[in-house]
Length: 263
Length: 309
Image (cartoon, rainbow over all chains, first blue to last red):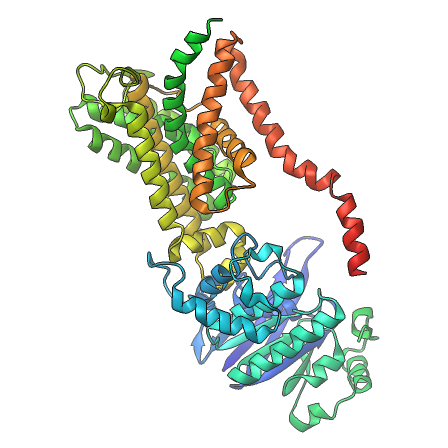
C-alpha cells in the first residue's frame, strides 16, 4: 500500500547544524496495517511522516502509494490520499473558522474548490451525527469558532477531519502528546475506534510504549533515520515494555534515552 | 472656526470615506483574511487612477475605464503574488518591490506626473461636483454607497463558497490548509489579485472624484486602509460577528476616518501633520490587542490555573 524506498533526508546541509534525519529508510505497509512507531528523540519518526505527507522534498529515494509514485507530488496534492493529525492541537484546525466550516473544508479534501456554496444543509446534518460520536457535546456548538475549544476538543475535531473522507493512509504524529492524560486516553481510544471502523491503514507515532504495544497490529522502532525493529501479529501482542527497552539497547547500542523511559 | 463650514465639508468627507472604503476592504482581505501585510496597494491605488483617467481621455466609456483599472490592479496583485510564492520573497518585500515598479508604470501610463480630467467634458460617474445639487441617483454619495453595498454582498457570497472558505483557511492556518488539500500558494496569489483589483477600482473612483490622477496619490494608502480596518474593528468588533457586517464595519471605519480628518482640518491643524497622526493612530490601535494580551491577562491566568491544575 505505502512503500518507502531508500529515503534520505538531511537538514541544514553544510552547516554546523547538519542533521541526517532519514538515512536509507525502507518501509512497506500492507492494506489495513495499523502501525505504531517508537524511537528516541531525533530518531526520524516525525521526519518520516512529514516526508510521506510531502511537507518538503526528500533528498533521495522513492515514496509510493498503491504503486503510484508520489515522490514529486506537492503536499496539497498528496492530501488526496493522506489524512493527518499533528502533535500541536493548534495546527490541525483553523481557529478563526467555525467547527462546521472546518469539517466542510476537510470534506472537500482531494476535490477542486469551486464557487459552489462552502457548506450545504445535508452536510450539516451529517457533521452533527459525526460529532455526536465524539461524545464531547460539540454537535450543539457547530457554529462556534474552533479557537474557543480546548486542545483535546480541537484534536478530536482534527481526527474527525482527517478521517471524514476515508484517507488511504492516516498519519498520527504523537497526536495525544500535548493533552492531559485523561483527554489523551480518550482521544487515543477514539482514534482506534475510527481506524477499526473504517479499516484505515495507519501510522501512529507515540512515546508511550504501553500504547505502542496495546494499539495496532504492527510496531516499528526507529533509530538514526531508519527502522531497526519491526514486529507484528502475535509476537507484537506478547511484547512487554521491558522487552522493548532491552531491544532498543541491544539494537541501537545506546542506553534508552530520557524520552524513551517516559513510558 | 465657523461650524457651517464644517457641515458644508461633511458630504465631501463622507464621499471620500466611501471611496476609500473600497480600498480598505481590499486591505482587509490581505491583512485580516490572508494575514499578509501587502504594501503593493500604495502603488495600485495610483495605477487604478492612472489607467482610468487615461482610458477616459482616450474616449472610453467610464465603466470600461473602471473595468480596465480593476484588471490592472489584479495584474499588480499577480506580480506581488508571484514574487512571494514563486520566488520566495517575503510578502512585505514583494509588495514593496511591486509598489516601486508601479511608480514607473504609473508615470509611463500617464506620460507625466499627473493628469487632469474635466468633469464638464467627460461623462464621469462621480465627482466632487456631484455631491450637492444633483438628482438623487447622480449623487456621488448614493452612487458610491450602492457600489460599496454591492461589493460587500458579492464578497460575502464569495468567501462563503468552497474557494472562498479555502482562502480563509489559507490565511488562518497554512499547515491545516495544505493537509486538507488546499493549494495555499495559489490562494495567496488569488487573494492578492482580488485585493489589489479592489484597490485599483477605488483609485479609479478617487481620480474621478478629485478630477485628476497623480503618481503619488497612493502614498500612505496602506496606512489609511489599516486605519479604517482598526477603527471599524474597535467600534464594532464586539457586536459585528457576521462576515458581511465585518466588511461593513471596515467601510464605516473609513468614513469615520475621513470625518475625523475633516474635523482636524476644521480645527486648522496643520495638514502636513495628518499623515503622521494617521500612522500614530494605526500604531496605537494595532498595539492595543498585543498589550491587552501581554499585560492584562494575569488575573485570568491565575483563575484558569487553579481550575485546571
